[in-house]
Picture 1: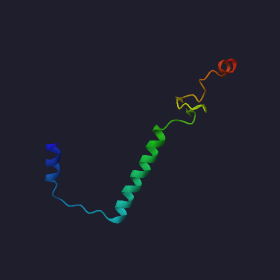
Picture 2: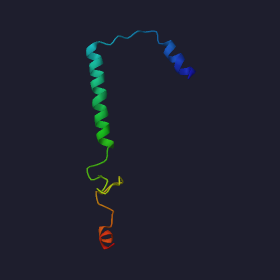
Picture 3: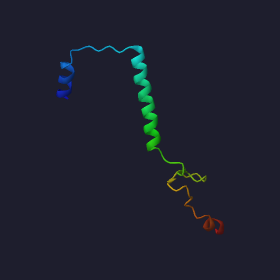
Picture 4: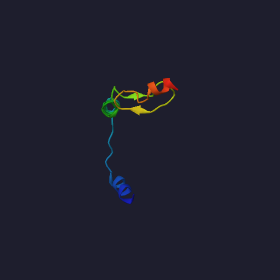
Length: 73
């Protein structure tokens, strides 16, 4: 922590950012976040829940529930 404080204390040069530069920085950060989110998000074949109240995730989009066994009970 002391090294970080010393680093910021040694920075004597003031840098000004114009409104256009600030807007571009925010836009680049937002677009980068969207792209990274798209790359690490679940794919289209992920299924959230199976419609009977559970919220498990399967990677193949298939339903793991044995419907034939439920019908016989």
